[in-house]
Image (cartoon, rainbow over all chains, first blue to last red; front, side, top):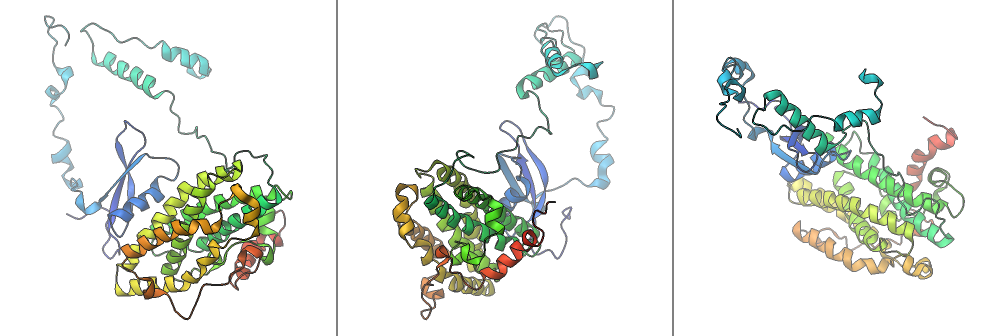
Length: 101
Length: 316
């Protein structure tokens, strides 16, 4: 499967960048960049995506290492849960006999 | 209605949010409300607009006034940073990749920040502003060392110059952060963290160019050949340092620390000094600290100063 955003003929491979804004939060995808290798990708990410104190931690990963869902299979992938209300806790009646649930 | 609430009332109403129910009869809505209340407590007020801008100029006290000797010293370091920053700015839009454009521009802006703080402080001795010093001094009044005025050359030249500059600056600012002059110490303490990154950038590229292709290694060696003669000038003591005493480290005292890092980087890049040192060329007699400059500074200043001089007082 091709990697979104990866253009043939680019000299440097594409990386995806994840930044964690604060302790206790998750890393969030912020964008992508090109770099000659992993170490330089981390440094480029620092230069490109943490210019205004956005982060305390940065992850980079080669875009080609990410397996993505296929946009054309949206129906099969993401519409199946519709109507399956039993997957929500709210669907169930709480038993009056059971405390502390 | 909400629009009429002032901030204090909003804060009150937030505190009055329903307490967590303790019975087992929690429904989804009350759980959601509970989560909202907890989120509000944990994170407090969050606003994307409310950015606190740091002070633009580093220094213990904006009203501190430098003595003539301290001003001369600050001007030397400020000019090193200013001229190297101006050189690096040329790379914007010309670097090998967009990402490298940003890296070099970041370094240039860090250096411009150091230059502003140092020249502002230097100017306090003669009632001149940082802009007066940057734009209205002529070539012989600049105090930068020759290393910083050397042309960008190719990317390898820029990296070789940056490597020497950053190793030296890190030794310098580490020592200067212990200065008995509070303003110099504060400026150095801020600069040293940024310079550490500049050094890392130059080291990473030195390793990659030296260990890359035959072409990249050859260019790295030419860069080192051309910039190596400008090292010694950085470490020459003169009478100013005698007078400054504990206010500033003697340049010669920084040499051992520089050599240690320099040798380690070259060893890791598998470069011997014999690979790039031209035996026919010794160390330059560069007199930048006394206003005697290489032929490269004049054109740089002409470009840097033309706008301010052609249109005095221009703002945009």
